[in-house]
Length: 415
Image (cartoon, rainbow, N blue to C red):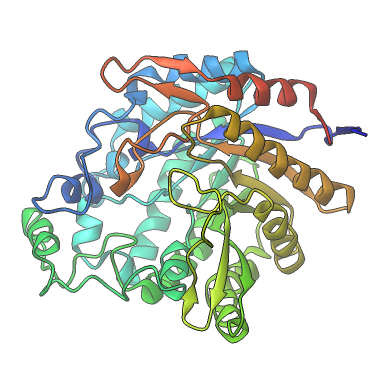
């Protein structure tokens, strides 16, 4: 028999976006260059995206009307510091208006300072392979936080800082794109006047070097953000699959956990929270991740439909990091919206079990608010609680949005 579970007072209910995926025309970023290079692996460029750069007010109002109380979004380094040392007052003022719109609708803004994309000049001068990027990132964070901090409710330094190492260790990617063998990569570097061997956008660099640079960037950025003089929680978000050992995979699983999860959990011990971002499980064999078993349900991204993964990653993050947890991303790309409801329902049941067991879990943020630009997959996967017509840029609220919004409004669920 179902019982009503009440979430703790002040629980954060929200949705998330990333600047490059929704704002549109992020022309000073490294990924914009890559998307427009011939023979790129990206199936289409981001273009106008969802035009949220101009439509943020209506999107934030939609969240409030649905019943959410939190909006996680990123500010774009490539807009704020388009050339080294030049900080754009106009772009900072734009993000102040976005933050003010959140407060107008009683939405708590959770700001991410880096969500995959970087300025061209950063990527072309060693990027995330180079330790000095950590210092440059911290300087940007300090400058932006001083200008925006009075309106920020909480902050994430880096989105999925461990993702490159995770993808490499499970066998999804090579150690680094080889410019000598990748004509499109070399051409992208040439277009910004960079040495291809120094061109290192995040997720296209030396993944283990980038891991260490990201760790140092977070160590420097968290106090830089806090130096703004305004008190709000600061943490980091991590890409966390629920790893499960297949026959012969125990040793490989231990290595993966140690090198792309635990090292970040240990750094997070000095933070106000750790952000858990989980979509599925990975079964690990001797050589890395195994494909989903034949016949299992898969999402539009090709992941196994496994909402129970979230409970496992919350428990592990809490145990090792020993700080409060916020689910900063969880969701599904689905053509059938009823499967989105089923996925989130089962994931939230796991969230409830964690809270019942005393885990300090402070929020659940669904990915994503809108159908958006899903990187090299383009606009095909549909994660959004709201559908977007990419010809008119009109939004249509899905039934799953109203369902989740009612849970957020009630701060309770039947489990």
